[in-house]
Length: 347
Image 1 (tube, rainbow, N blue to C red):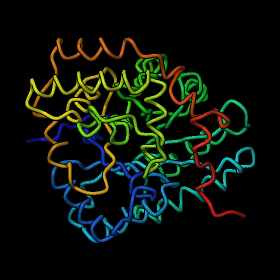
Image 2 (image 1 turned 45 degrees about the vertical axis):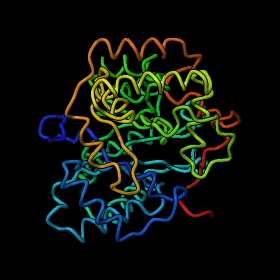
Image 3 (image 1 turned 180 degrees about the horizontal axis):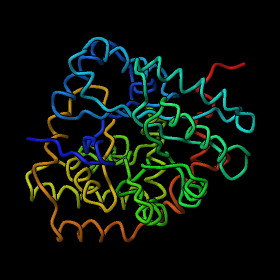
Image 4 (image 1 turned 135 degrees about the vertical axis):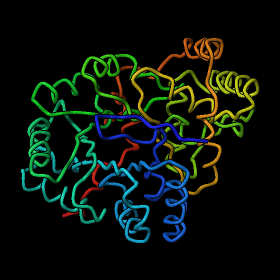
């Protein structure tokens, strides 16, 4: 089987499944570095050559850099998408030198001379000065040869428009997007389609909730063993609660049975068939589901499948607003679980 690829711009194509790095940053169990490097090699050899990481994913940029050093024959095959996420406490005080220093650190960690794609996030774009100016400094680092491409992560349509109107060459957007979280469709994706900006989606499997193990299971009370389950249980609550989520899992299972597939495969196939979606990011701490994930390119959903899922998702009560609006409220249920100052050690 062959992993599909997507040409983001002329001369730059990525695998339509992206290996996510957040699960390697802690909070999801112990990580064996040697095993993680072997796993990266297995993903590349299977055709998943695009990696997603961030300057705030503790140790992950270094891990990818170690992989590049350990597997020099595979290193030229990969595309590395990192993020630039300055600490909340630093917003409003950022300088061009701060931006370049953080970018230089990512270059050192990843052991590369130029970053393939830097996805920009700013914790308070509507309230703290410096949001647009910092994006312009990233653009200057493109011209300086330290960054090749700029994307954004977790911005809504209005915030994206501010960057584009300021001349920042945004190429990609990374939203949380799944059958239980359709917020990007409200405004972000229509705006991106007008601008030629494509989506690199995360959260499609809701941190592992979209799986057969949860079908028919009683609603879990929490607390949960990892950060993903904590985060996505809140989304399930907003979607319509455990009962409607069970209906969605049942619909996914029926479609999976029809095609001889699994529930996660159907959810991944669904996102890959959505308009404006270039790729889905799959978080993994091992190769356990690698073959299953790659097999999403061996089938397609038909109109009947899409209608069956829409019959459930059309009865959702939320989540409300545009992409990441709820999480941006630091006093709200979603914002209170976020970690805001992971980029640099405390002063």
